[in-house]
Image (tube, rainbow, N blue to C red; front, side):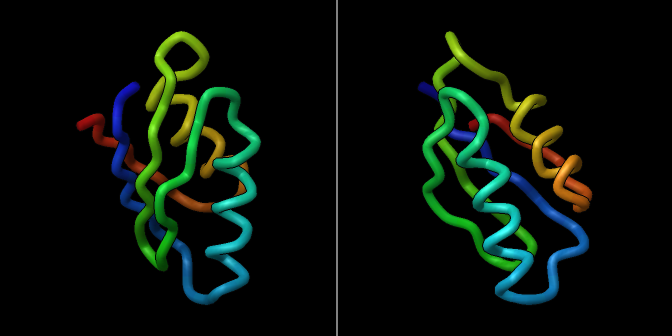
Length: 70
């Protein structure tokens, strides 16, 4: 398991937080730790997903995400 920290642009309210959390929870192998305005932290099972896939899910939800694996 690896921890991924996301920097997310475009979030401005709790609706955004909920939309990002739902997008992250839909990615196989991802456990969401925290989602706040502007950031998120998740744990990724490398056998099921990647940091890039996590960032892509947030982008598909309409936000700009940059992932840094920890």
